[in-house]
Amino acid sequence: MFIRSIHLENFRNYGRLDLDVGPSVNIFYGDNAQGKTNLVEGIYVASSVTSHRTSKDSDLIRFGSNEYKVSLDLTDDDGSNCNLMASYYTEKSSLSKGNRPGRLLIRDNAPVDKVSEYIGVCNIVIFAPEDLNIVKNAPAFRRKFLNTLISKISPSYFNLLSNYSRLLVQKNALLKSIKPNYKAENVDPQLDFWDFSLAELSAEIILKRYRFAKLISDTAAKHHGSISGGKENLSIEYSTIFGVVGALETFLTKNSKYDEYMGKGLSESDYGRIKGILSDLVLAKLKSVRNYDIDKHVSSTGIHRDDIIIKLDGLAMKNFSSQGQQRTAALALKLSELEIIKMFVSSTPILILDDVFSELDKTRRLSLVSAMKGAQIFITCTDKNMIGEEIDVMQGANKAEFYRVNGGEITKEA
Ligand SMILES: Nc1ncnc2c1ncn2[C@@H]1O[C@H](COP(=O)(O)OP(=O)(O)OP(=O)(O)O)[C@@H](O)[C@H]1O
Ligand SMILES: [Mg+2]
Image (tube, rainbow, N blue to C red; front, side, top):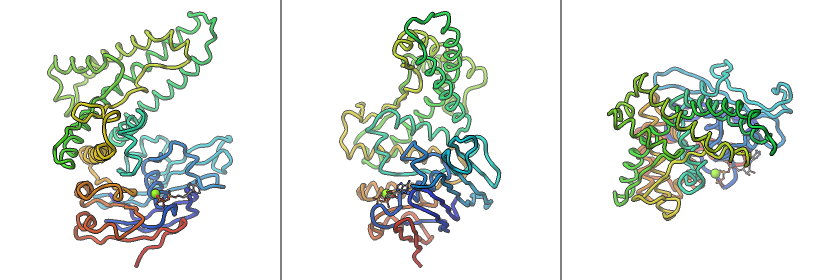
């Protein structure tokens, strides 16, 4: 798939931008703080709804405005055209109904009600300085990495996550409202209901996360090996509620179902059996911490606390690795994201490289670009002369296009 044109309205420092782009390599250069990252963020938001660098949608609205609109005209690998438009508005916007902030998603001129039906249309993989957070920062960054990847491939996973978050918010509201002199018979039936529903959803989420964590581990290890010359071993382990991974692995080994689970997926009856085992385990765990949770007014246990542990030669990278090792691992993880999307999605993903060349040495830069041949690519940098050999590797026979970014305006070089 490739983008033919980009339209931004009141997005970050852009008042209005209508820009035609080339199907191959597009290079955006300019001084700091001119709008290079804002442009690629706009492209990313138009395809994926949320930003890669903030979870606050209102930050994306141009200062002084009440709504942004970002849209893309696209052509798929089979030559068919489509259009995506995402907008977010504040309660003051004329788009707002009932004085509430909200979102509007439009695909081919028709409103789309479910985010899950929008985010799979155009797959974009973005490489940005923030990727380092996946390796060195809090578990929330790794969950976001895992959730974004699985959601791009599986709309049903995105729906499971949304349902889980909604139920968790409701359960947490109840936990917060419980007074110290509460009577168990008044709160238990409601908590039993939330816990049962959360445990059912958790089992399905765990089954997807474990499988994708394994896929990431295998593919990232391969990329890591080729970037680092095979000197160190990268591995990824899914970490969730105590005992759950053990139960899943025992089920798969005892029934010789590992290959089936990793490949075409378990049969309906096996899926039902393992889902039952996992949801029972989660439910027992949630009940065992109930008194503590009521006391502390939090949901202390659950898949909302999951993590993936990134290890180098068996040691957790977060605690033991150097900056350079973390950078290589982050790059290997993102290359694995790209490879996994290619495995599952038929149309070629679009790539964004936001300011990443300056931080990588030549070997890493060439590993990055050689994974990208044939795709449409957007690159931002401060100095266009920094990218030479990389362009030749990426573009093949196609022409690279250059654009100068200056104060929220973009001029294409003739
Ligand atoms: N919501 C917003 N409304 C208006 N301007 C914004 C908004 N959010 C950020 N900006 C402005 O956008 C500019 C930063 O743009 P951006 O991050 O795209 O820079 P950049 O060209 O990528 O720079 P660098 O080379 O430093 O990465 C800043 O001047 C910032 O004040
Ligand atoms: Mg930038």
